[in-house]
Length: 184
Ligand code: APR
Image (tube, rainbow, N blue to C red; front, side, top):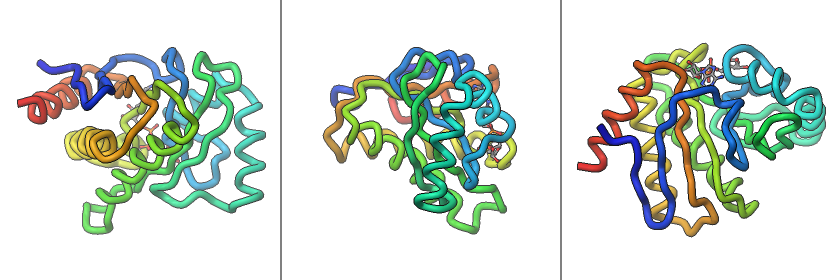
């Protein structure tokens, strides 16, 4: 079962755990367009990170308006172990015929771009859109891994570690299965 993959000089790694506890430079939030918090990953990040995150989100929304699906912005990590949070808005699953795949891939590439532009060395992603937004987990895992590999192949980056953090054993198996396919 593959849990790691090296692309150029960046290591992709599958991790089982809580995204809020990851000791990386930036964690990614599965946010919504209003950026004011919610449930799932979003709720956990705001709870642990504290009010500095929502204050910065409020400033961002007042400057650029609501964040469209597939886009990403960066804020402080507040009280989190991670220094930064990259907030991205995944697509709501509507059956797959509404460019959900492209939008989801964009969440990953936009987040990797922001991290690279800032010279960060490590980032951790949750399984964006696979909770409240209903994206089928196996399809979402394939998109996440393919988007990250594509970005790393096509761009030079400061990132040496890209982690996919999943909460439960079933999601872990799904990601490991996808990593097996690309490693084969
Ligand atoms: N760490 C890692 N993974 C987690 C955690 C956690 N602490 N909490 C939940 N997950 C997993 C879920 O099991 C799911 O597979 O993250 C995945 C994404 O789930 P959601 O957080 O529901 O994200 P999403 O489907 O993108 O929905 C976003 O939910 O909370 C609201 O404000 C948010 O409206 C937005 C929507």
